[in-house]
Image (cartoon, rainbow, N blue to C red):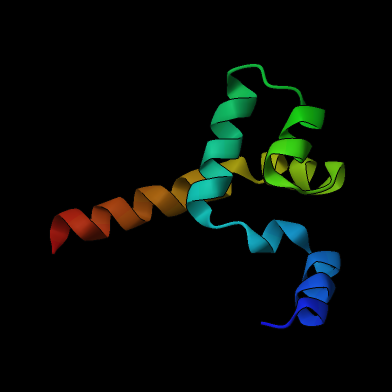
Length: 74
């Protein structure tokens, strides 16, 4: 991907650049007391994106639960 396209993607929605696994790590760091400002620096996203991910943490956790159930039934 070219540098210009990558910068545009970063501006659109940085939270979408993170994988589900990265979002779960972010949620886990927040549970362990890491401040949102530090999470912004760690994951290179803005405060509103961190807040959005933390606000939707139940959705992400249920996605993982569904995926693990599918893996166990295969």
